[in-house]
Amino acid sequence: MAPISIPEHNLSSTGGTYDVNESGIQFRHAPGLPTPKDGTEFLSRLSNNLSLRVLDRPSKNELVFELIGVDISFANALRRIMIAEVPTMALEYVYMWNNSGLIHDEVLSHRLGLVPLNVDPRLFDEYGFDVDEDGNPAATDRNTIVFRLDVKCGRNAKEDEKIRKKMEVKWKNEGLVSGYDVADAQQQQRGGGKPKRAAAAHDDIADEPMEDTTDPSVMNLSVADRAAADAIASTHVQSTPIDAPHRPFTKHIYTRDLLWSPQGDQLSRFPLHSSGVGSGVGGGIRPLHEDILLAKLRPGQVIELEAHARKGVGKDHAKFSPVATASYRLMPHITIVKPIYDELAEELVNWFEPGVFTCEPTNEDGHRVKAVVTNPYACTMSRNFMRNPVLKESIKMSRIPNHFIFSVESVGMMEPAVIVAEALKVLKEKCERVSGLADDAMAMGE
Image 1 (tube, rainbow, N blue to C red):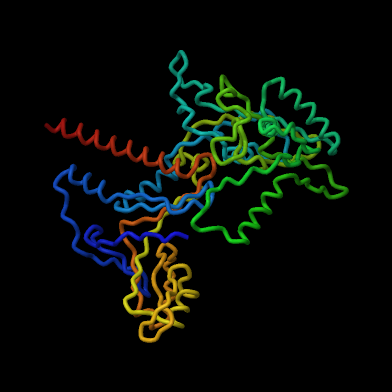
Image 2 (image 1 turned 90 degrees about the vertical axis):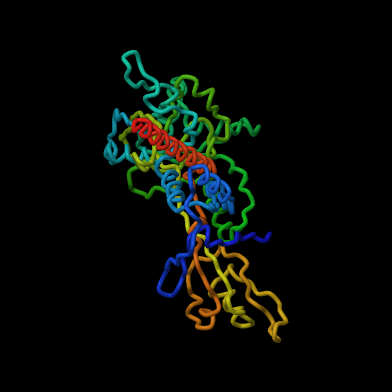
């Protein structure tokens, strides 16, 4: 692993630091820089000190980066915008034609709304941008995605399979696209012919697992994590639920049963053989995950509905939020004020703060090894070393007020780096709006 360069901590640029002690964290003030004379000096100082660097990419949906030289208000605004103001597409309106299943209409509609869609929201307009002849907002292929769900449970697996095959003919005639159609198109694009489908409607899609294209990470997965990931991937191939004897047949309704109804030129804009815009494996416009359980039906029960997806933001509803988590922590600053040698150094490295310190060979005063700080990014601020009175006096720990380490985990419809970029655009628009209002107010005052 390449050594990590650690920025220097300048107290004058931060106005102080957060000292870490046994009782908690206490802010220690320090003489700061003078107040900028005007906006030009402020922007010049900000641009000279601002720095953004990617630290880690654990997976396709995760991003760790550091933001240096900004106030905590800027960092928190960026975090809140990523959570609540970056637009995405989600199912907004559900038209329930028939539902004789156990799940109530409202509950089923709520479950559908929380299904993440594998589509880039930047390719769609806000609802209301297009209007009809009377000036009212109109639903078009540029602002609305239409899905349908038309399922019925047979008396047993054999009858249910006959019903599904009969329904497939109807769906194809109506131009509807299911998860099976996407799997077929992608398999043919790879030149492998048509994949074999599952025998029952509740079986998983029989498709080859996608190739792992995850970039090498600075913090590599452990053997146990890799084994768990391989186990999850292997279960994606095919699994058939086992029905208990002497019980009525149960049909499982998954997100792959949602039928995409292309509107206008959507089928040409989002071809089925594409690999998807997000981190999903589906082409066209499909749910991000095809194996999310929506409902269960017993013989004779049916669900018929139509759902429309619109563009929205997380502050209106959590289903529009593009991130699962978006958080930050302050950068630790660790200084060894007294040398730590031999057994005490090994104890510090292996037990108190693993990954932060390392032992280096030394000949100082006849000692074998000496503890040095190598990776403060790995510090969790546990303060366990303070239990040892010698280490407590030998190590000084603090947090840098203007150095933030962000962790962003995307739901999947957009890459985390794209979410950060879109959040910065939203923040820029907010600043320009406030600046414009201030200019207008000054002009009115004159």
